[in-house]
Amino acid sequence: MDVTDVAARQHPVGLAELARIPVRRWRTVLATAASVLAAVLVYLFVLPASYTATTAVVVRPVVTDPFSVPSGGADRAVNMTAESGIATSNEVIDKVAAITGRDTEEVADALQVETPVGGQVMRFAYAAHSEREAVDGANGAARAYLDLRRGIYENQRAAVLKSYDDTIAVVTAQRTTTQKSLPANQSAESPSPRTSALLDQLRALNDQLATLAEQRSKIASADLSPGSITSAARAPVPSSRDGAPLILVGGLLGGLLLGGLLAFVRESLDRRLRTTAEAVSAIGAPLLGTVRRLRGGQPDEADLRYLALALARWVDGPQRGPLVVLSSAADEGREQVTAGLAAVLAGGGHEVRLGVTPESLERIRPLMLEAQRRNPPVEPTPAPLPRQRPVPTAAPVAAGGPAVAAGGGDPDETAVIPAVRKPRPFPTPDAKNGAVYRSTPNEEQTQVIPPPRPATAGVAPGRTDGQELRIGPGSVMLVPLDAPPADGLTLLDGPPALHDERGVRAAREGRAVLVAARDRTRLSQLTQLVERLRSVGVEPFGFVLTGADRG
Image 1: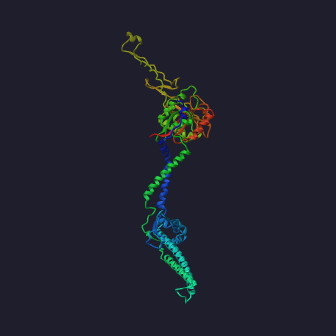
Image 2: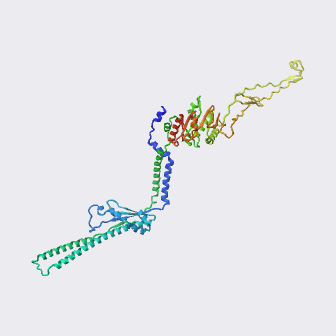
Image 3: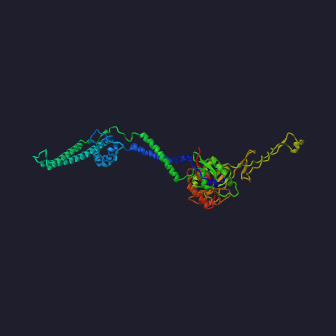
């Protein structure tokens, strides 16, 4: 299957993927939960406690007969909206402020009046920093409301009674005038028309006075009781610290929920690389390998060896050119991958030229020294020399020469032939590997003197040129990034490509391998890097995924 087909295929997002977002953003979740929990702790243990006392009042309607049952619902007999306005009026607040000794604005904020729908019960809740103040405030507000309501109704009744009294006085005066107009000697059996009219007027005035008196008596007998306190506030009263354990648990759960929401918001605003499919879709190149980190922060050597196998086309190719390792940012493990790959290639017997920038040299050199410690240099084994033939020792000869020895001389006289002295062996160079072989006193052993390795000509001790590290049977030569090309394997560690184009310039003459870190690389930056590479004619050879830990 072509890589473009895989890239074009959309990656479905399931519930498991959504659940991983808060896990990946665990720092955001924990920070938010800790902030909310800290705020709850400050509220519970640092700020002063808040005590809330509640007083219940039953509101009664004004009726002429206290034993009569009002028709309809109770809320029709008493307008609870109007009563709530009376309960929170300035007169009530001023009386409560005088009782508690607090400012009127603070009292208005601390006093809450609840009026349930369809009922005639009002609840006065007062919050204060002390238990006694809360009780006094709630009870004082209830008594002030009842006193104010009674005073309002009494003033209304007094005004109505005064109106009735004035009317009765006027009618009584009219009746008196009418009575005076009647003739004193008028016969009752045959009254005159004028007398009949005055008598009718007098009867009407008497009826009017009787009606006014009856209405006045009803007003005077009206029950003006505004209500009564059914449940007065008293100690102990609930405080803000009573449910501290539940508040702590609620704060923790609320903080975790808020942290999860913030994690989703950050994920939508700052999208990171999560899966291999996302990397393939963004880069459009195959995955060369996944390099995991060990507990000590070092990359896994087995993953690096598999990465070297994936790069076999470049290692064994006739026109390999430099291999440039690029990344979009500096914290994606690019330097560890480059140093580890160079060490693995050197451990396989290759001579590797590693081009680095001056700012990356101080971070790559310790990695190479650690690789050299794990894989010490191995000198090439010299070819064994053939064993030398032993030289025969001198034998005693009879005196008189050979003739004596042959039987022609005196057998008692013998002559000794002096032994021939062997020449002192000189070092013999080996033309193949440059080693020098020197004979030891034991003629069956040969000492090998390794030749000194020539120093790089024209290189100062402090420069990166010529800093060669022997790793296993191979070596790694640290050279500047802009060093002239040479034969052999050339591996370049490019700086972050979004801000420095030196690595991209070198990749135009070779191949580019991108390094992306899971849960760290931003997809927007990775896509921007790939677009810049393709715009200058560099096609990524593949990518390496880092970021996963391995125990």
